[in-house]
Image (cartoon, rainbow, N blue to C red; front, side, top):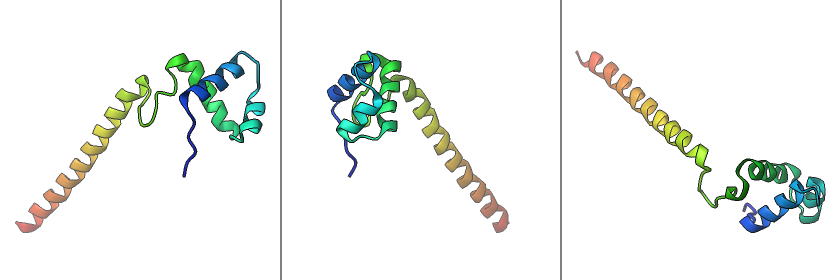
Length: 94
């Protein structure tokens, strides 16, 4: 099972790193969290500030539109494949 961390914990860690109170390496070693994960948190915090880490399953504001379009694109591709197969089926019946 994947380990999860509270939003407040992530914010505190990021604030400490950004204000240079602690380093990514220090946090990573103290809490036994991989450095890339801590770096990703810091990156998200720098980009979104206190709006970062919106919670389980909630997408960041700039990702929502992209996700919706991505899902619609996937659905349309599947629909297109079905129609192509149906067209082949109709041609074979004639």
